[in-house]
Length: 422
Image 1: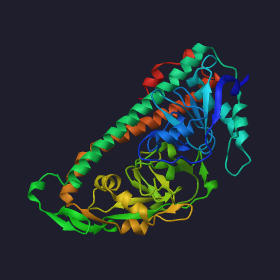
Image 2 (image 1 turned 180 degrees about the vertical axis):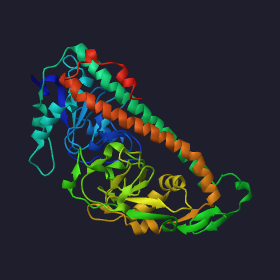
Image 3 (image 1 turned 90 degrees about the vertical axis):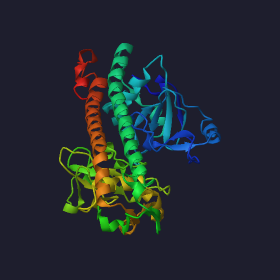
Image 4 (image 1 turned 120 degrees about the horizontal axis):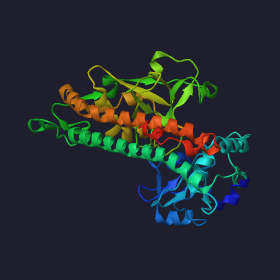
């Protein structure tokens, strides 16, 4: 048995300060960007070349290196893909495996297996916030490694799942871009069917077509508060699906891997079903990146989920097509405008009342209905791909500990098992 240090060329800590960010530049990887095996780059912080050089003085990360999260989500680890230049954000650690001793992809999955995750959890216990020390990371006991050939086959099998998940995620992003382009064409540029015959008038919210009417958001939809909860009511394995702040992506959209399980009580108004619109009203940083962003709840085996107090459900009235309302909340300037009203000393909060009081130009019902008819197939295909990703993640997470522990022999693993999940 060897330690992680003995299997690595280097293990380097991050800079213990926040890097100044900007709109474009090099990726700065923080703990939320570290998934289970792969980096999550949507909404990643960006830094200048000058900052990049300062933050890589200890070591410049390279493709094939691993990045470990030292704090929540503690123990997550991802490998740097080819062609990506990045620097470490706070609470992360760079690990460069010795490729002569261990396959880097295999080591990634091994560190995500039950045995190593158990060590990580044990070493990080005892503090208010779970945290790994550098000495603890270097001293992680790595079980005896299988042959190089077996390492590569295990890594290849599990990577195939992650590759499919990434491919589906890219397809979802393309579908969302299609919906956004259609929304902007009709309701921002006002080039909707028949627009040539409609005059453009000045209004409180700028120039709008004469057929549009000014209204408060609260007049076309209800804003429903979520469930206040205790940490003891959350579980990893039992209870109902629980939609929380981590389910909302930074740029909008729903993250199924952010859901928890809830074992407490709830009211009927705190239930969310497939297609319901969920919006973040809390932000844990002062950057206002999540607050006012929204996503659509996916189909769930239980048929519904409970949503937390950190989000609200935006429920359209009978004269407001849900697909139009979601597109407005997601793709218009709504989020950027309303998030500036969030307040709080340490945690930002956006009042549901402020959401209801937002003034907008509402298109006539025949137009929003026609728009909804066009984008519904787009959103349905995106939902199908998201369900497929959920199945792929479940299968991968079931296989991972069994493969790296040797409970399932890779020699006998049927290749058809992967095809059956897609």
